[in-house]
Length: 143
Image (cartoon, rainbow, N blue to C red; front, side):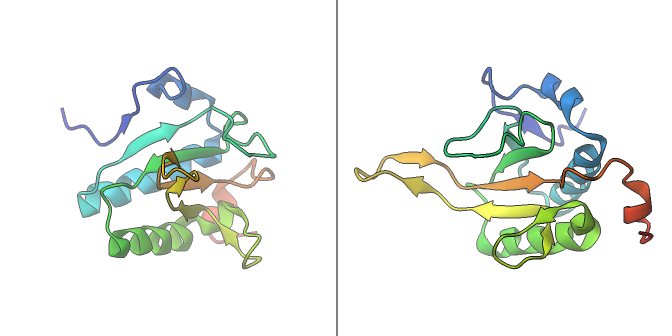
């Protein structure tokens, strides 16, 4: 059996927690796994349900976000994933503070403390907006 994705082996991110993702997040996740499979890129979930450091909103625990490791991805693959995901399912994303546009995927670089210790590894943050209950009309181009 082929393994299309895996989860970090911790109490914070287990594959069983995927049942708590919202339907719209599961659709986004499906597109992301498909992209990784097409491009033969690793797909490791690092956070499904844990509140992240310095987070003001608990979107992971609400089933609207997941984090995926990108340590072995190159810049071209990162840009291609962002383009693909935002073209395919960007309408499901939350509004970006920077651009004011909906984005379903955001790359977050490595963050280190003053001593150089990594406190947050580079990853994709996949997130859907709160208001998406019925996602099929949006995916089919109907509002």
